[in-house]
Length: 181
Image (cartoon, rainbow, N blue to C red; front, side, top):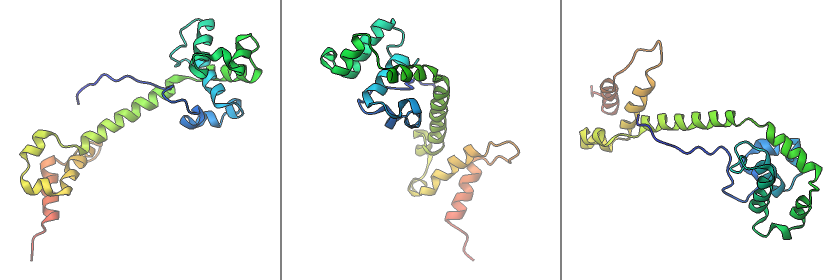
């Protein structure tokens, strides 16, 4: 299998929607249950280690987070003004502290595993150009020809007799065209 360089995003700010809809585990967390959608996003930007602004100093991170959440004229927003004046509400402080406890390693492992499984399953069912070129017309029309590749890739389990792709194709052909008596 060829190696590809992939940019991994564990959490994102691609949409302005509620992070609790994108990440259901946040919705079931008491600290985020009663926050506004913008407050949850603010907590994530300020507290989560996967935030794109996490490496900035605390003051720079706060200003950038307010700009991302409330827009470039955030100082006109009443909620943002309160935070700018140094009076951050307790429920946001608690949310930031909770967000700091999340370990992105688990999400990274899950994401990489799901990408790997997708690649493996994709390689099982997608025929290469050379495989398609070597097939005759009847094989190309037969949807059962997808089965040999997926079966041959799944026959590597320990303790199982390995069936070769050509043996499986022969079995499928025999199944598709049983001998007449």
